Amino acid sequence: MSSDSGTMYSAASDDESIHHGSHGISHTELADIVAQMDHLNLDPKQQGREEVLSSPLLTVPVIHTSPPSQYGLFGISLSVESLATGVTRVDSRIFHNVACPSSIFICGSQGSGKSNTLACLLENCLLSSYLGKLTLPLTGIIFHYDSFVSDSGGLPFEAAFLASNEDVSVRVLCAPTNVRTIERIYSGISNLKIEPLRLSDRDLNTKRMNDLMAAGEGTMPLYMHVINRILREMRIEQQNLGVPFKYKTFKKRLSEADLTLAQRSPLSQRLDTLESFMLGGTGKVTKTSIDWTPKSGQLTVVDLSCPCVTPELACSLFNICLPLFLEQQSPVGKVVALDEAHKYMKESDESQTLINSLLENIPCSAILVSEYSSQPKSPRFLPSFSTCVP
Image 1 (cartoon, rainbow, N blue to C red):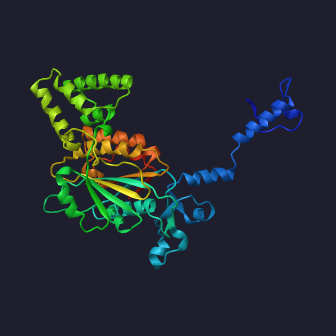
Image 2: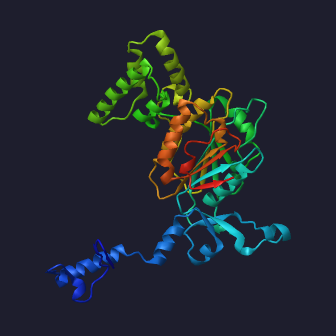
Image 3: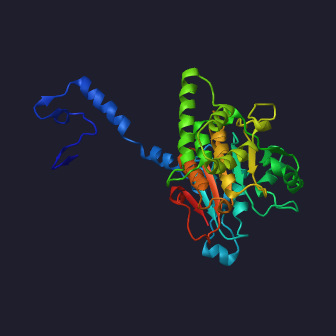
């Protein structure tokens, strides 16, 4: 292929094509060039398959010709003709590509079916059935928070009903201050396990403690400078001695810091809240600590609906649970979902910290977000989603 700027060779087989200027090319160099071009020339069929494997939603022709390793039925594409006649064409089916890491944003008004859509997608990821192909079910985690839950009752997260199938294991992690109420709310679902969310020393580290403080991007409070100094000093000691983070040590050094009562007040509130979710209030690892080991076909619902839990606290705890779930090494795929995100993803430092964590992990995990379409401001991370389901 020739151009005004020079000559491009994709292969060489005659004397003219193996010369460049006045210098000849040996047969060994020619063989190297041909081998290199073979690596650069992408077969159109292979390129098409790669595009299919990276698509979150697939049509019937694609399933018939180049099916991914795992997929499930998602819905149908309605045409004007099918709406008029009431007849649905077989080739109008749409499938969810479970094998492809993707990010799906689900939006709509109340009662529009957001939670049902989310449950359908989770079913494709967790349950093998005739509706698709799932050789190795994924493991999933759902973050749920509802401020309307009270001692008089509330509604369970819809996807928790997957526990009715014996092939899916569902557990609900709730606030220790609302265990009885959550047990009553989910009592109508069989084969469901409910545990209080308990954190231990091994669940905390320098970054998570910083995120828990969530001071924001504005002027940093003085106590945050002190916290950063203590965490930095502890981090150096951990690296030198090869020991993990110790909350007890952190709190001891914080109590020895030179802080006024006004400076200690907001800090004490955050630490008291954290300790209410720690084992025995000391961070000691016991048999009751949460097992974050990925298990195929398991769904973990972190339901922090509780009168004692604010949206900001819910975001902080979700941001601790997210890396605990994702960092576990396993061949089992992972899916992360946020249900009714508008109820806790508000204009707060804690929400912003959770958003940043989600943005960091979107490329490696399927993330499903549900939010009202009537929200005045769309989430900042909306452009990062590969698919939007209104």
